[in-house]
Amino acid sequence: MITLPNGVLQRRQVQRSPVLVALFLASLLTACAEEPLPQRRINRSDCLRTIDMGRLPEALRRCDAVVATFPKDPGPLNDRFLLLTLADKDGAACQDIRKAAALARALPQRKLDSQLRQDLALRLADCPATPGGLTSPQATGAPKPGTPGGAATPGQGAAGR
Image: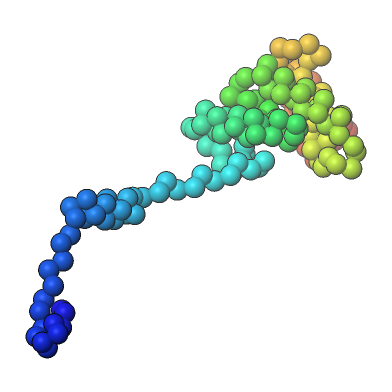
């Protein structure tokens, strides 16, 4: 409302530009657009986060992403060894453990977890010197522990046979 010099109140007509109205409505629509949720950062421990044998290929894909994110860390390769072994991909598992062992050897002793170092040594011993697969007693034809001709069952020792 505007007061004229003679004291009469008069309504003022405001003309709205159609362009301004369109811009205002467009800004309202874009302000309400939903933003995508932020992706969770890949963590070194994601390989073995959740393992479901029915979803083993999905776990392997997740672990592939972890290995790609941390290419100089032997830990994810060690974890992927487990998943590949469960998937009966012994050749690929041994390839991973060899690479993990080489990465571990390049690290100073104090920089690598002693449990990981021990795991790598044990798993590397199960792989043949040449690529191909695991050399478990069963793969080489040796008797299974706890069977006749095999190692003693736990708790009995060698004298318990």
